[in-house]
Amino acid sequence: MGPIAIFSDHYRAIDYPNVIHFYQSIQCRDPEAASVYADACCCLIDYREPEEAVRIANQIRSQFPQMPLLVLTDVTAPFSDQHMVEITGIGRLRLLFWQANDNEEVLSEIQSLLYPEYSAKGQHIAFILSVYNEEQRFVHVEAFAKRLQTFIRSHLVEGSIYLIDDGSHDSTNTLIRALKATTDLSVNRINQNLSPLLQTRELGRNTRKAGTYLEGMRTIGADYYVFVDADDSFFIEDIARMINVVRQGYYDVVIGTKDMTAENRSLLRSIVSFGKRMVSRPFLPTGVVDSQTGLKVMSSMAVKRMFPHLKEQLGLALDLEMMFIAKRLQLRVLQLPVKCIDRDGSHIDVFKDSIRFLRSIIDIWRLDRRVR
Image (cartoon, rainbow, N blue to C red; front, top):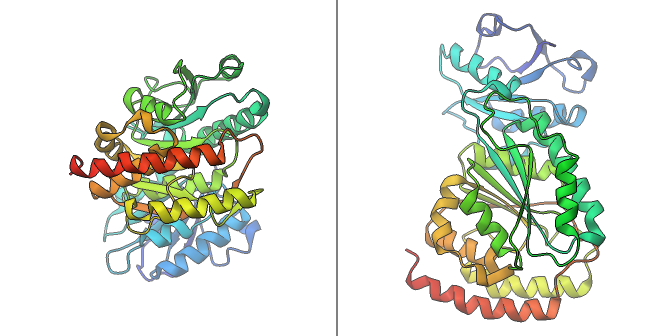
């Protein structure tokens, strides 16, 4: 194993050779000098000003996107949620509030950062992917599932993928079963009671995505839930960033918005999306402008509180209902812009689904009387 690379302004005057005596360490000054810490097992970032720590972290990640990072802060100049989301890359990220003589905590955080598979009680993350009539686009589903597998094995360990078939009429269910059969389901972790790396489920009816979400919430036990479209339209880096924010406890729900970043989007879909945003704005939590982007990360607490109020018959409007319930329950919600590619062959009928969406708003409005 390589050394721990330490980037510090020495404001906290931490005696790192004694604090992390179980590991080799090197003191680094310039993140651009990549050759100095190319063999490092992780980087420890210790700067008084959060903005400087973010700058150093991003310079490191520009050289090594998968480099694990441990960022030290304290109560006098703490990291905010905005600082967290500004750190790029897909590597593991831990935040430690330093207190004098807190050597054991530093060692514990480093251990968790380097060996997440050896954690006695890991935080399990469930990736829930809804699939429907994807036979013609299955190359995208398979590619995304494989990228998620690589991400889990390399950076999360305690994670599982659930492909839930939303009543497909083509051979989608056969294809996802074949994908499972050819996937190495084992993950190098101590807790073998967790779910295998990839599982498949079948609803037997089409619910326009809503039923797959509810099935995942009802039957899958996890500490965090990632609801994401299965067609490889989102980027792992954005998913990793959202997971890092939720795991730090700043927010109960983090959702993406692609309205300003989507690629290959038609003019008609852009206009309809704008109209939906205007109509749904009163139903959304503060700071949220878009409920329909298919990427959301939630804590188990948020899922448990929202689940009793969700209705399968809302179909695609379930996304809006989730945000409305989150608002009524005063959950902490953050929206982040994410990169997205609008894939050809979408099952969304712009006109019909827009009419359904407007009808669903009336149903959601009625929730106001029973969600408190």
